[in-house]
Image (cartoon, rainbow, N blue to C red; front, side, top):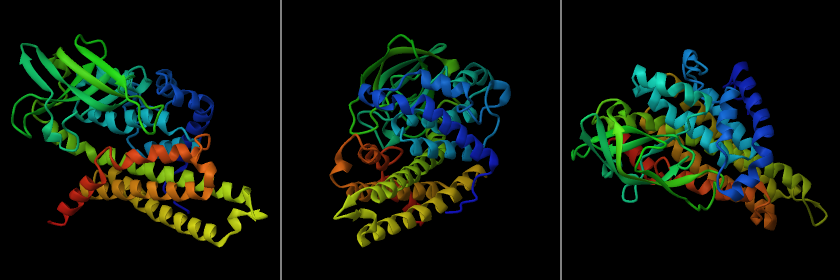
Length: 381
């Protein structure tokens, strides 16, 4: 597929990140998968190489270029290198967390946090999901009561990506009982008294990505850590969800393509009944179907990335991209695993790890059912 989506700068950036991944991530990836976490050092190494904070102003240590195609090609190289779990921490840091600081932090907060975010010395996470509130953002119950120059935070979060490694948690709290206007964003920092991390959750896939439970018991958070205006979190969150969903969509198509490429090579090498399994009509037809679906999805995702860069991506189109790309990811990887036969079920083969990693993409960032709800609203239904 001749995309013509990236220019020479994007391609060079992607090649540089792939070289970084091959040196710093790939050799250790299976160790991190077994350990259930990737080391903090991958962030500082990525930051030192220019792969974090591409949209952060240069004077604050970033790349100074707000172009999501750099994020996109980085995610595609993560998939191609087969380091999805560890790579997710980096893409979440760049794609999901950073936009909140760029859009809503005041000048003092930007000076305080952005240099560390760009360097990888400060790792970020978003604390939205709670044991009793997932897709329903307005159901958040973690409370933050004003006490002079501080907020007193009590509550808990779960399924938090980067939850163990994170230094700055963009935490959704309830500052009043108004269902939508009573929510605010506070930055809770590593080391604050009363802030504790629970277990690193044992997941079906994405094993090298730390995913944690967080708890807050009378945590005193300075008012200076309020991100944006009090009571504006619902609008802030819904305003940034399209980019988060595009990040997941980009990853979905990239993972599907990586699985396809690995399978294409496998069927050419693997012999059965005296010939390569790639010579069988069923194999040819399955792969023809898959590459067509991947290329069609890629065209729409690229279109949406362009719209995102223009500031014109609608919530409905972001939801279409996230829904379609992640469902595609699941279908493609399932069929690719089938073509691997019994070997596809062995975790020593990348396709097995991709299969396990893929399942959550139809859940996090908004389930497929929530995506359909958003899309249907755009139809006036």
